[in-house]
Length: 114
Image (cartoon, rainbow, N blue to C red; front, side, top):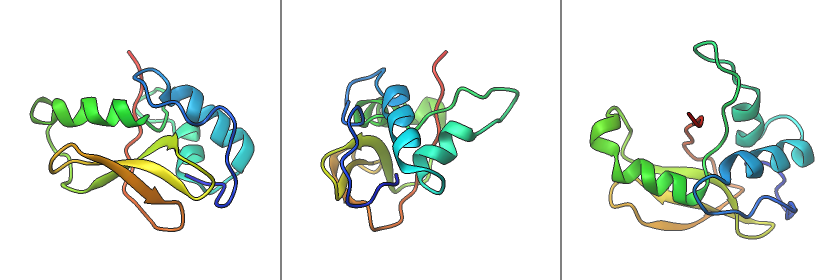
C-alpha cells in the first residue's frame, strides 16, 4: 500500500465506506508507487473516483463474489493499515481477514462507490 515503516494517520479505517479516506491519506503521505496511489490515480471506464477498499469492503466483495464473478482466488490487500509494517488483507477463498506485511507483494482491486 506504500509507506513501509510508517503508520499513516487516517488510514486505519476498516468499516464499509472508509476505503476512500484510507486511500486519500495513504496517497498523500506515501507518494507514487504504492497500491493506494495506483488506485487513487486510476481512470477507468470514464471514472476517476477509484480507491483501495477497506478490510470490511473486501469482506463484502467476498460475500458477493458469485454475483461479481471473475475474482482470482487469492488474498487481496486492503487500505486498512494495522501498523507501520502491516495492513489487513482478505482471503477470497474463505473470506478470512489477516495481517499482511507491507514488504510483500499482493493482489489488490480498485473499487468505487456508486
